[in-house]
Image (cartoon, rainbow, N blue to C red):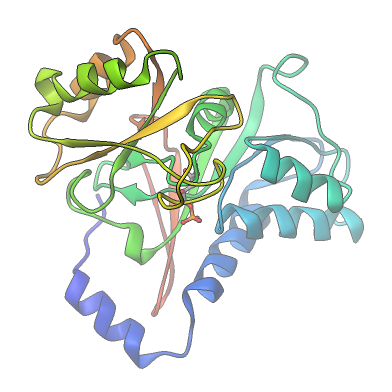
Length: 258
Ligand code: 5RP
């Protein structure tokens, strides 16, 4: 399990000069250094932390430190970044088995279950990451929590067709009782919840963010209820998927395996 204390963490953070971006870069680089070898099929995550893993992979390919890599991006944004770095890309259609996938997360609980999808890429992330032999999660310590839910809204990807009906259906699920279900606004899937248009994912769908007042008690039960709801495409609960999490804190890097 992962032990933590928010108050101690924030105190230590204040004492050091490392910015959150520098912490993200540390774990992004380390994930590639520790887990990617020549000849691998690599899943590339989405977000401001995964960005640095993609950057590192591009560097090592350019320098010749890594060879014969093919990668599968989890969003249009990541695809564009990888292309700009000359990383050879393939898709799940030709490569259904990945050696490793590396991605960030919005929340990580002590069992290494995750909330993902703050950046709206949860469907492609899950499709790619379930196909990986190893799924490596990279976070700064602000993402650690004792229980999923209250610290970050749970994103659920739904079809645009009759989305208000689906939103009400989700809010009335037994495991989601008491949550506040909010349709994500923004100018595109890359935006966090803001803006004045309905946010559209890379797959042409909408996102509902579920705000919980208390920690989710049974994440696998909620995951299956959401998944069984017609109109829901997928959700941001990633249970029993993580191989290892690499955490950057003010006192260095630590990692935990499941
Ligand atoms: C995108 C994700 C991201 O991994 C998650 O939002 C974390 O992003 P960041 O590293 O920018 O905090 O799930 O859908």
